[in-house]
Image (cartoon, rainbow, N blue to C red; front, side):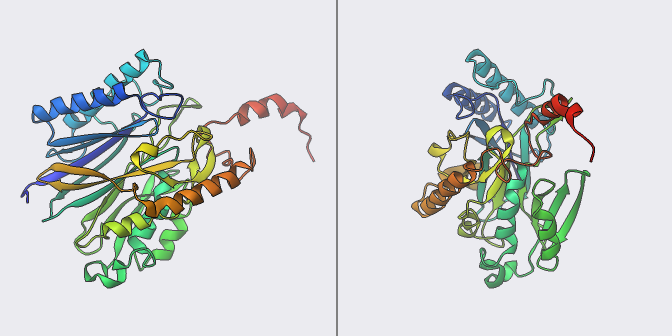
Amino acid sequence: MADKSTTLSIFTADVGGLVGHVSSHPEVVDNARERLSSAKGKGVISDYHVLRCGDDLELLLTHENGTDDREIHQLVWNTFVSCREIAQELKLYAWSRGLLEEFAGNLRGLGPGVAELEFTERSSEPVVIFFANKTSTGAWNLPLYRIFADPFNTAGLISDPAMLDGFTFTVHDIKENREISLKTPEEMHLLLALAGSTCRYIITSVSRNTGGETAAVISSQKYDIIGGKPGAKCEPALIVRCQSGFPAVGEVMEAFSLPHLVSGWMRGSHAGPLMPVPFYEANPTRFDGPPRVISAGFQITDGHLIGPHDMFDDPSFDEARKTANKVTDYMRRHGPFQPHRLSEAEMEYSSMPIVFDRIKNRFRKL
């Protein structure tokens, strides 16, 4: 086991879609692998892996530099920019949307999603990483609650002595730009009161009450609106540490057996079920969806990523996928009506200001 700390950093970005928003082009993915392979050869990073979920590119890195390291963020920025250049040459869809123009020392706020976790490796360090497409950061609230606070999902909360003291959730209020820490099980009801409002209160990390070790972190960047128009955007990612004082791998995966409703889908403006799929099925084509989630399992050994194992490539999730398809049928029949279409405040793309401008003089006071 490594004595020094390891940092696991994951980054997501939309650098251009193959056939609309369906997938990533192999040349884009290969370019990312080549650049990270070169960085590994130079000793900048310990290891790497490249995935994609829908049209989003996902970079996974291990290193010893800690979180928010400028050199690591610069490497990732340069990688994404070079991938975007290939996407531009191929005229892939929306290649210019996922990144702002200049690197400012840190990727946060520039478009890419960022989730980083620094820890000292245990004798065995299993980690499960989730990537979603066609949804928003609030999509993780319900699974995180189930994993770390619900004994009906996570039996270890009552049967594992190492988890009896529970976990603390950090919740970000994205409207007021503030955060609060809530301790479970004591403050479970307070947590639920906030976390149920997934468009405003986002669970950003979870830690053990005993010892304070971080158990989970998410990429908490939200879609940016610049000058009244959609700007750079990213899809959410989630890192969860498992076993030995943390929930078992199976308990983590169980939280996704229900394809719960999330916001996003077509134009980021509709609610739909989060469908758990294997890597090869992360190709949202029906109404640009329904929203997808993939899961990559790794053992981290001396800073190296052993894996991935495709965690949703399992027939036990077939029923979840069937349920998601049934819910998809049901929600689509609502067309432009709520609750399928999101409220005005939640919609990423909306013509409502234009509509109101056209008819504003026709309204009569009552």
